[in-house]
Image (cartoon, rainbow, N blue to C red):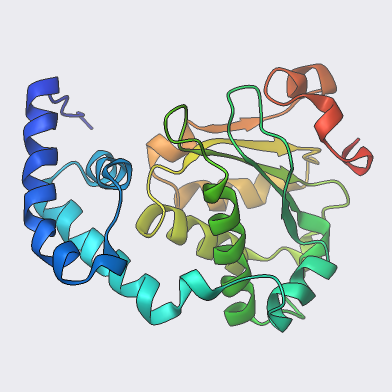
Length: 229
């Protein structure tokens, strides 16, 4: 598949057109206004002004309808998922300054979860992580999956598919790097299926970590929980 590369001038023209088309909405409903960085992310992801505009309209409507800005600690569903240790945003970034989301796969079980509750939790985690981004430096995340204790019996494909969908449609260009840590051989078959759901650009951001030294190339080891090793 060929990839069209736009010149800087063309990219700037597309950005100005997109911003101009959204301006009436943002002026009429200031709470729906998005940053220039957000507009540029959607443009990079969808590579077309019309497509980016449509995706942004869906995005701002979704945020309002879902009540994204209201998701916070204290919500019973979110507190339950946090207590189960399914995912967390670490206090310190990776070497590139990306906020780190750590997903502990052994604490997920498709047999006992409510996908609606889990979706709410994923959105909460992504919102918490993106708020930590310094967009003047870097505006994407390092999502790290710890597969220690992985079991085929509790593999939650629903969680994975929902995360992929959210990252592609609601948080495009927010994934900077995805690290797979402690991957057992039995995960190979799962990965073959998951890879079919990924865009080739997303696949290129995924790294299977081979050792602690390899992991240290991406993340300072002292910011990670001891249970990861």
